[in-house]
Image (cartoon, rainbow, N blue to C red; front, side, top):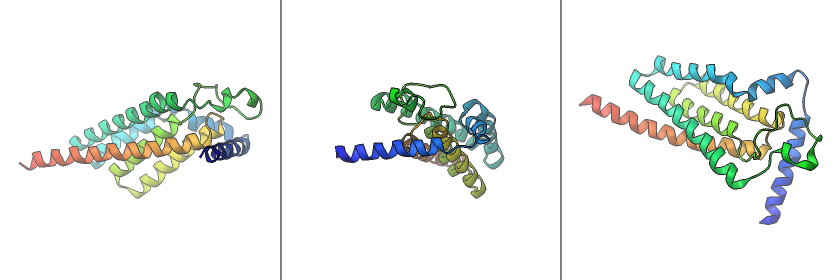
Length: 194
């Protein structure tokens, strides 16, 4: 088992150097943009506002609460629970790697596993795609989540495994919150029917 874990970590390191090293000068600012959380606040507001166009106001408000709950869960599980428990150093904190890869942002927090960015954006993508149920939206939001997650490796902040596991956690938590949303929606419908 220990040999398997070592093999996975070695592969993860190799993939990190391949992805981080495969860059183009014109992509650097684009990937930094994708990694920048405040840039996406208007998108989050647009997604939340869009619920009022496709859902009755009670369901729209519930869906917005679902987005907030999804972000809260994905962020707390990834940052406060898993990172502190696993304590895997970010690439920028591995002393012997100093100067061996491109770091396009500041060093960030000490630990990298799992990527909170990946967890948050995939949680949002999962919950909202299930709520919206529009093919064009699902493709767009998952493409966006993938680019945000990829950017975390590109800018030198995370290993591929950090991003993959973060995405999985986001998908699971986004799905759980959507199941809760469906349950609340059914209760609202049954009350309105009476």
